[in-house]
Length: 320
Length: 297
Image 1 (cartoon, rainbow over the protein chains, first blue to last red):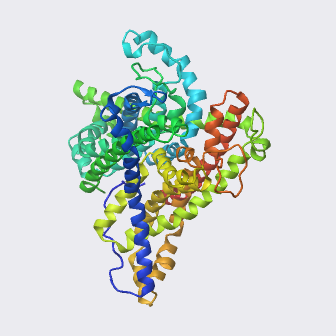
Image 2: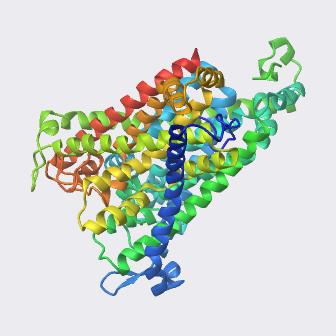
């Protein structure tokens, strides 16, 4: 894997503007393919924008602040799903960011090659497991396990803090957060590892010459140099968590209210779309679901763009 | 790594003279390194847990019935033949559409375009990979399902193709970048036209790498559920060849059966999940093991 967004070698291998008509035809068709692909993003964005118009015209700002989703009354508001999305992703990040960063440090700085290579391979395999398989495992293995062990324990010990109050069902926000954490770990590890590897050796050698320990080298030379790229890696993980659909849909419990406690059942934007879209009547309800989708698109694309710029900054400064 | 030896790796004699501050630093060093090792192990545990449970629970469900019988319309029994056949039809069609677009786009970026537009198109591909796949489902629904008032397998294939294109484009482009310019020049110098040079020299040289990217995209498509929900929909009927009708797929089968209140259907979901996991991991391991072997050598 290479750093996403990293600048490549200069392109344009074939410089001549002229050429036979076959050449021109070929060149044009490759151009069409490239533009088609890039245009898809625009097309997806435009389609969501146009089809969500009805919902935004009808509800205005209330769409984002209201809490009712009532097909009978014809009122569709987004706040519970926005909150569910943000909270489940926040739980995922709180778990995956530190573990992912430490793993990336281990793989890039501490582990001998014969350990780092197979570990990296296994973590890439984790990324390959389909979302729906994680969901199945989450419903039948992870959630019952959490519901029987960790959740009662947290309620007993921390239950006096409102967000840790019971009851717990196993299925819910907390389970969804943990599944998401597992699913975004490979992204965070892979990108953070690449970024850390691109820190020039001279930085490490300078610290070592001052008598620093291995950890001090990491802490004071490598991490400061790689900081923006690491933040980028975590943001890419966040982007993935926000848009993840199937596994979350299966374990989050489809609660319709704003979750206020860690173990509440909730719904994310993506899971709301997945569970409701096919049954929705064409018109205002579909339009509202598409409006949810548009918000998700805008958030994930902005996060992606920011993250890739941050990662690229480290890649262009360093590079071995 | 650094050529100088860090404190902890120095010979014992050199470590003897240590102040309390030094000892504290050594402790911090050891504990943080231990923590990093623990984090790395924690990353692999879920992989082990998922593979273990899917194998244990799926082994009982993965039998001849699951592979050969169609699902019953009502109640329990039957198998996943509709889903297996559905995946085996939609994914080839998606691949046939996605490969030319992805490869040609990569050729454009690497061989013909200026640096600016190359960066922009690469960036677009990266962003496209990051778009939640459920939104791709809505997109394709609007153009290929709504006008025909019928969920159909063709829309499902196109949704999968849309997800495959940027993956194929990015991996192909990485490979083309490694093809030495001297090969292109040699070919052109022999009077071979540009388009032939690209097709039979550049792409031919990178063929193995391109196939790697295609296989990884295929593996991804096998597991995608969200974009199929609003397009191919899924079906209890075996659909062979009718792309204008709804079609089942392995991940949809797993999703639907996992939500049923019947343990027998849950069991089928586990069996199908084991099948899916075997396919996806086998492709990934075979393809990646090759490139890893090359990198380690």
